[in-house]
Image (cartoon, rainbow, N blue to C red; front, side, top):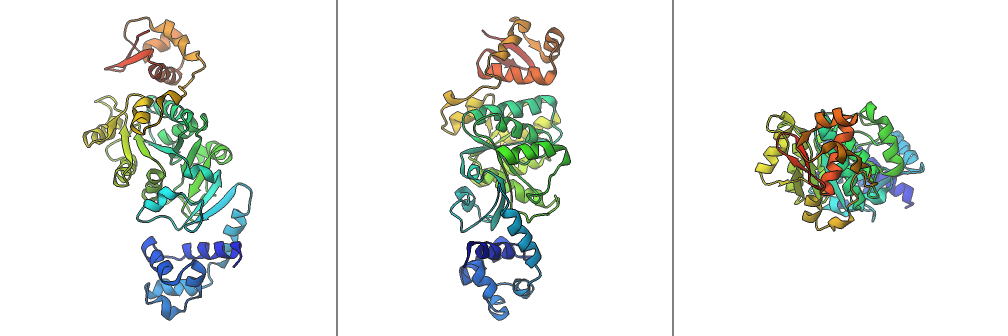
Length: 357
């Protein structure tokens, strides 16, 4: 069988309505590769799966969709990985329900790279997005690929930070790999497709349905060695990702915040449950046994030192530094985190910072 015919059989099997991972594994165990599943009779199939699913397998209703997927996979930068491919990420095979196939845009090799998931609120505070981007930049500088879900807020900031380092970034979608969602991240989507990796288990053209995102979350954690939650409310989907990471044997990390902030409560709940409290990138790298000396601090060019004269040696907050320096809160937040990583500044309770060198 030609490779394209083999892939067509995999795609066809993945498109059968109602066929979940367990039933799919049962079919493959009984008949072999998807081509042999497709060649089985209705009577043979009904011994393994319900009749409605068996009828779908012998149907040719999906031929047009299969052809479109093959055309998409043939385009430069696109690929479809199946469970039988050597390039299929090994860490996903540890899951109880690994996707039958993955639609990939960009560098598929990143799926096998050492990586860290960074997730958090879609409605993140300026401090939260600054932390996500700066931490992601530091981890990417240490060679870790940053995995997230391309949502607004923390996810988008994490991807931007990942793209700034050598580790790059992986965006796991809750829709088809050809669907840009949310629209506000269209530019970021294009940058990741060009310099990182877009991946989805959902068929091409799949809309971003609500039920897709919990399934997407298990892949975010499954691809990664650990999961860092930056900001999250108690009802945040990020906590689902953290729970899945723990169930999959991955490390869970959380950045604490103000006791008055609703977006800190999810992180505090995780810490109470055993997640590791994170104050610096080194905290995560040491836990993952990655040489902390390889970290490239955000804005390591030395530009962050220009903030030090405005700090003096007395504790001060971001508002004071904005008034003294004329910089934006976001710029100051990123510079402060870089200075913390360089051990030139320490954070204090109440959102205050103090110069220590």
